[in-house]
Image (cartoon, rainbow, N blue to C red; front, side):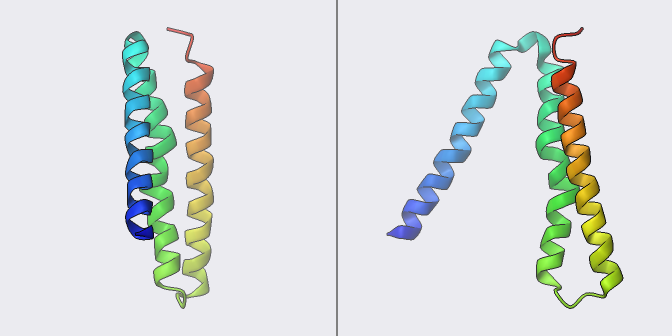
Length: 96
């Protein structure tokens, strides 16, 4: 029963994010390019750079130190890029 509740809560949270993004897209249709840039910076960059490396660190805990260090450096770079891209998008939201 707890597992089913957890799945429902996860599905509800994902559905809420989709509905919120659709609402923002409808309200900001003139700035849709900026919305896509914000979603790409905030969600796309971590999906490409952060999560795979974090999963690799978990799946291969006995990897060589150099590999672990490179993974951690790339994770930090990915997080910095995500924050910077999102910040630039938000900062330039009002400009054309």
